Image 1: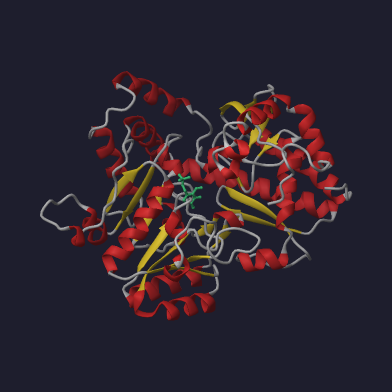
Image 2: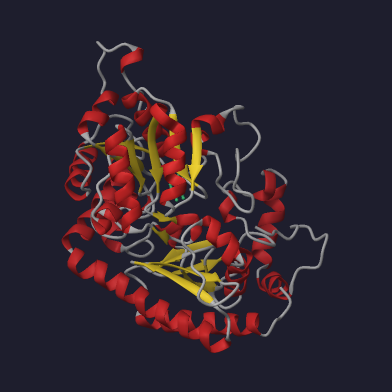
Length: 457
Ligand SMILES: Cc1ncc(COP(=O)(O)O)c(C=O)c1O
């Protein structure tokens, strides 16, 4: 990710100069934040050059920045706001639940209702445990896989982001992808967590062979988020299902993004492949902090509270002060209830809106002569800038070889000047109207023309 220094040091490209001209409030806040927060922000993804856009509020499909400018949102709160920002049918129950307190800190009925709902909707979920983030959920899932099998090696995908989970901080980010992700990790992490190439059966078979009889499990997103929702191929998922069964290893789908978004039962319903464990978050919280690990009762039950069990016979899952906060449970219940009851209308509507948007995007880039691959999966989409027309983008190796990944960021930067907000990838929600899609396409066309004109980035 190319970042222009926040305090200058080099002239910002033209489109960033435009951004600077119309976002004085964001610039002021970032300067203030830099004095007390390293880099001026607490979530790395929310930084974009030259400084983050500071939002004032979001409603429906739109958000407003602190300078009063309005944007059509495609980021949609890290892809969580499937019904749109602050939908009244969710806001109402949350406001009512505020009367019961902010955080009570003991078991409440709402968590039972949400657990039952998750187990009804998600094919692999015989049992579920809640936590407060997707990062925690992936940490527990890996621990469960190791605890259940008594083995150590976890395989993951090159480029797979599962939150800043220490166990999985290997081969995550461009451009190198290889090795531990940062300082501060224990030496030898890559011996126990190893990456294989998404959609590449040969490379994955190599990883499985090398893990041998110490293979505990494999974790993957069925649509690789950091790769713009690259979609798992049916053969690849079936191969993983068969190999994990054969070896007695645990197949974990990280459905923090795809859960309840691709279908009521998530990617596992969409693709028809049932994992052993799933990690969930985002949509499930209805806009509030949440995470969960769910799956086969045989695996989940080793995390049960049982004072007769010694440390050696159980896996610790849970322990967060805010776990099952009733506001998250209420927002999650309200959201999932709507998604389940109106599934026949909602999923076709958001996928249909996205289909029209993606078809329009292909026309826009074709018209200006920029070769792109528009990846489309349900309500999710991403534009990859190809080095040559016709190249494929099936995994991170192909993304690095066949595309200009930095142009995705340039496009997002230019779109902010045309009233569209996103970082990378985009999510259509139920709140995006046909008019929003027309306006999005007009903004993309303006940016595509700027980029095709060869305006200096
Ligand atoms: C696939 C995936 N897993 C896990 C996480 C971590 O979830 P959270 O941000 O709730 O900790 C994310 C967050 O973006 C994600 O995209």
